[in-house]
Length: 367
Ligand SMILES: Nc1ncnc2c1ncn2[C@@H]1O[C@H](COP(=O)(O)OP(=O)(O)OP(=O)(O)O)[C@@H](O)[C@H]1O
Ligand SMILES: [Mg+2]
Image 1: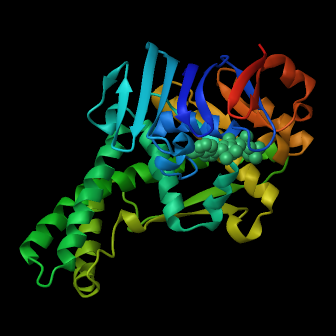
Image 2: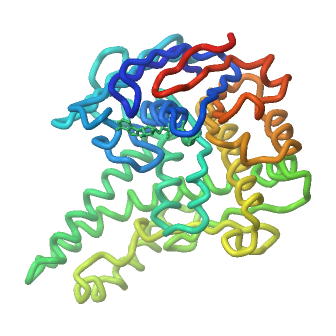
Image 3: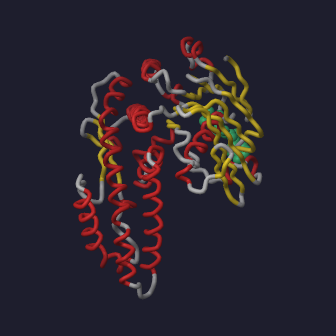
């Protein structure tokens, strides 16, 4: 899939900006603080309904205005489509072809984008919440069912925790809620497990090509229960662990077991990436992970996502930069940021559509 055109109204430092992207490589060139990341953030927002920088909706409204609006025209296997997000202080509307959607699962997945951002480096060092966020956002792009199960589970968890906070919780009700939580968890665990195995199948290869070394990269899923392919057994495992934790939950007045506690660990040659890998290696692991993801999305949905690369040109040495460009499949529409023209070698310059970004405006520099 590709973005043909994007329009930002009152978003960050953009007043009303339209940009028509080329089908292949697009480069946004501009000094620090001019609006390059903001433009990528707008594309991410259209894709996931969230800022990849974890900004609140209000923060993205230009100079604290009342609303912002993002529109884009995409080209997909099924033909052109239109997506809009109108985010007002009083509420938000997401539209597909001009029609507001009722459920987020009708919207998410219509524009798939994968971003590499320097913030991704936090994936190794931050709390498990970050890593679960990664799993949930990326899986959500490929599976509307995942989003539905996750929403269902989150609501049940909220109800269960509210019940546990009460002076004398209604125990039969607690059991009934707990029972309903088993199936969505089994489905989510299955999808997380499958997703991580699929990433493991290709991530090392991308890393090797990118780094020119032979390292082995592995993602390890730290699930709440040992994985079992049989659905009945998996559900029984969840149920029995959940039952065991019930007394503790009642004492601590919160749910202590569940997919909201899961995590994931990264390994490089059997050493934990977090404490063993260099900054440059960490960066390449993330890029390799994103490339693996781009391919997985293509495999699962039949279409390549749009790839957004923020600040990679300045962060990689010339050899790795070339290796990265070589690794990008030709059919993938890519938008890269660069702080100066010099970071772009002649070959890239020739093949890319280039934009000059200055003070919240994007001007076509080279078609
Ligand atoms: N809500 C907002 N309203 C107006 N301006 C904003 C808003 N949020 C951020 N900005 C401005 O946007 C600019 C930052 O833009 P952005 O992060 O896209 O920079 P950049 O071009 O990626 O720079 P760098 O090369 O440093 O990463 C800053 O000047 C900031 O003041
Ligand atoms: Mg930036």
